[in-house]
Length: 132
Image (cartoon, rainbow, N blue to C red; front, side, top):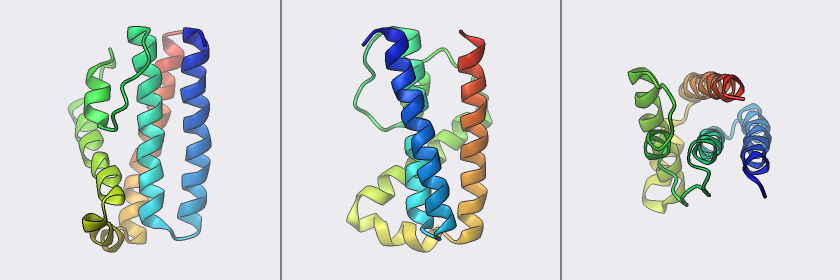
């Protein structure tokens, strides 16, 4: 794949995952909705990694580290959201944290964070479009 195709791969995959997260939310699978929401942002950040470095992104899931390896002009609030969103990945993956995440993810909690994730996703897409 060339650079443009690689970026497109990550963006298409993120859009697909966003649809899956919406379905999970509608079906009240709130913990998994936020886990997949993390993947959405991770994949878009990996598209930025490819855009800015021309290399294959590292096999990491830390949104803050991925964002820092790009030229994105993130606000402090956006950086904080990335850090908070990281926990949906870690806590959904490891059995010792899964139940805690499940209990935390009420409809209201998930609605708040999923809304923030979708807002950040749209902002990231806008940044990508501006760089074309």
